Length: 144
Image (cartoon, rainbow, N blue to C red):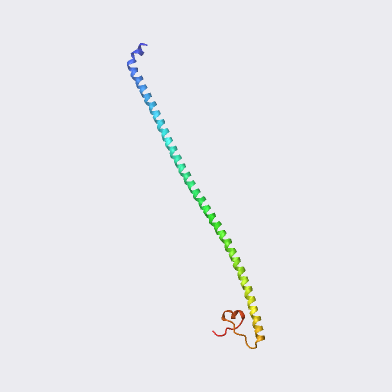
């Protein structure tokens, strides 16, 4: 045991130095873990930020697409309504045109009957038809 006491002046600084080195190593390890933890946290924060940005971008695009689809649907509905209105107007105009044709045919037939009757009542040529209806009556246009 004397030999251990004789080594005390040498062992004390060595043990102190080992304690200091051990403490420094523990502090270094703690600082490194904290730094790694902060780096990992910063990395995870940047990942979260990136994912949030991408998600917001896709959400914005999806909202734009929905708005465009809604606007397109509204336009299609409006165009379909206009088409239905136009079809009704075309049907009405076609019916009016058929009616005018029937009236015109009846009027031309009536004029022929009247001319025949006038020709029987008053001998001689019938008066010339006005230029506007001469083609419909089949008469040559007299005097220009």
